[in-house]
Length: 494
Image 1 (cartoon, rainbow, N blue to C red):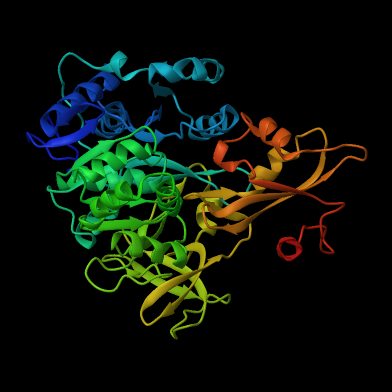
Image 2 (image 1 turned 60 degrees about the vertical axis):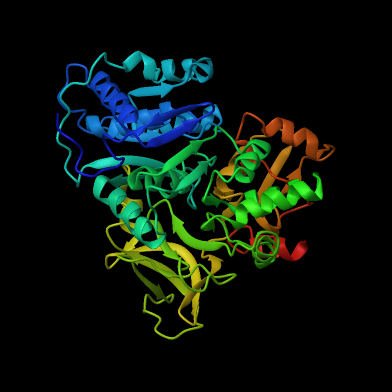
């Protein structure tokens, strides 16, 4: 039986790879299950030839089986967010020309009508597990491996395609930079349609031969109990998770708080990412646990590009220095490299970690590169060798709770409300969410609109994390001579 060219997870080991609830699975068991699943996926084919196979499930043995099985059979893995609304899934599945969807039994009723309408075969992992593993294809490093969807400045998210070579580069640079070993044990509770959970935690953990504890959602009491027991020595989360932990501490006994904080103190590494970590939160966490959060910078198109050092100063408010194998350069608006410190410019990236293309979107792919550099759209300055993110070059990207949200997409949904005549969405600085989604709306004469009613209306039309945290009714939105809403004026109104 042939193997994929890169050891996405160790083979033939009795070490525990995954823990899900009360069950644990060693590397040999997981590998065997993946090979059986890949064999079932192939059926009578020798190679899936980059067939797009979507899967809709939280962190679980089935998730790992599906992702790795698709890779080993020569397909393109398309992991989807289980919090997505059906209308959003329609776009993802259609865009990727998905032919098969793998989902747990609990989600199949939700997905059946949509899959039927798109002529997509809806299956479970159990449906495809062969009795024994068969011959699997040789997979070249340059083959497409995964498609993740990310919100850009347009109304619709784009499919970001990575090759096996890309994924290898994204994993191996973090294995070295963050000193992963087979002794590491880490909880995984982040959504698994996102680079943070897929690469930084799951893939790095399995590549290193570590143990990953799988949680379908962030369960504070269960995870804290494991922390008190000394189970974990690595912890990765978005700033919102650290905020929620601190808020949780306000609801429990001081002695219990101390045991949890002591558990964190004994870990070798705590990481914060996917959104800017406020300096206030950075200092609060250090005071409580003694842990100095390691903040880093990345995005769907590049994996991780910049990181504070594992050994050395982890600086509050900064994302650190370029990772090994990653070229990073700031450019001004005239596309000239910035060589002096403390001058802001757009971050551009080169390296094997950079994605291949936006799926079926040559124009967007072409526009995102200049002279071989990927243009991130994020603005930063370098101070004493450390990068500090200033914000997006576009005001239409909101970083909330670890997600990058498209304001234009949210506005498009709001404008389908019968009583809303115009809408503009911005991100407002918030201690819990990083940025809170805030909507300014104009409504029809004689109409009224209460926040709770709008929130209920949004439910099912957009993912829960995209629903505005507040609304502000305005007589009219400020616009420039071209009729475009001037969003900086909205922030001034606040």
